[in-house]
Length: 140
Length: 406
Image (cartoon, rainbow over all chains, first blue to last red; front, side, top):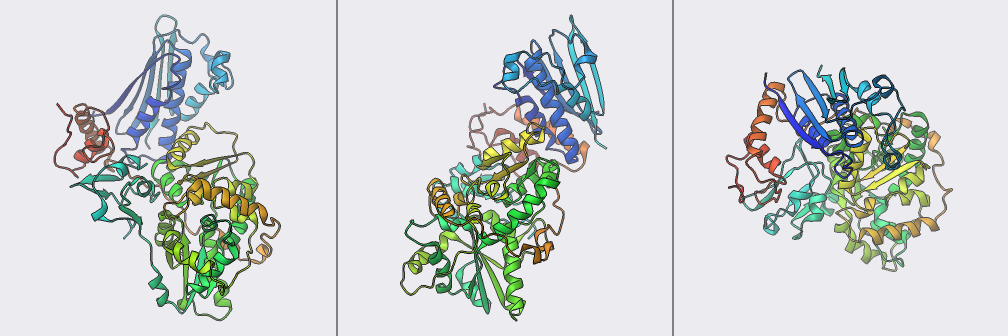
């Protein structure tokens, strides 16, 4: 099956570029006649996933892939893994350091927003392998 | 004519420099055969290209004074931005009066409609889901339709003052016994976006305004008549806040939105709309967006520098009474304030309606793009390498013509 993909490298704590990858994904979505609400949900997922990589990971890759029937956003990092997945999914729970919060990030809404916006969410995390987030939004 | 846009190119003045190409928020301009061309399906009439052109090759496609001859009864609707155009010693009352000398039978000050619209928006702020986005700048509405379609539901569904003014002026003239056919309503506009708002309205079938003239075209004559002794003066009827709509921030002040954000300049507007889209402004009630720096005083069809015009408007507004306002608003037919039709998204960047075809075109685009240098220099006539690859994939150019390609 033919798909269209955007892949973006995200560096740890590089706030100057945070949002660039998700805006590339959004630009790709504009090439399709996708429902506006779906486009917005993917925009939220990819932005939150990218900011998570910037704040919490040692760096990683953000990817947006368009299939004929769905859009899949993947964020894979090099670690250190999420200590408590169920806590991380709770709105307002954040492990972001103070200096990050002072920048207006790390309010503990990232994963809950992603969950709310995705039709399907797979989250795998371990200290050795790092974290892989796969969020799917169906087009109809 | 569904793709009407109000930006006109004076070909003789265009030297194909690509200054306009790079500023367009929807990548609607290309240079082909050394002349700028607008992709009409993409243009939002924001006027960024008019302002960027160093040769003044682009102008607003406005009507002219000869159109007055087609109507028995002519009403001028001057935009509040007009009051920031003249030296402080030119009285606003004389500016209004000069329209009578120009051949109009009546002047309906759009600022009075700003007062009424402010009141209606105020009611919406209390009742609606936030953040509300102002729908006063027609270029911003068209930008939202094109690039941020899911934000259409955040727009304030209240008609812009120019449309409300047009309807009220016509209604009052008809009540005085005039035939609607004989009435010509002429809006005096600071920008091309409002020309399009009249010629091709987004939230109604037909505008109540008949013709649009530009402030810049009338400037000389207004100045001449305003300085003549026998020119009549017309009393200002709107409040200071009504006139304040001409500058960015004036609308928020008039509607009493204190938990607000004011954004002016189309490139800033696109950024802020992008932030609203991903939910980054959850605690804001009202967002005032203007395509032009300074708001309407910075429109491409005005004369004065936007920063100076903004101060002039502010000072004039501060001198005026703010209690005049919307007396009698309750007696009006409130349907004049509401949008007649729902605003629809415009997917102008789509490669194809069919997903599979769009994916395969997108892949081809990526392949071509990988061979282009990514300088986004504009030398090929497209704003970016990506846009150039897109033109090729869509068949509007037969080969890529990159001067840097190895």
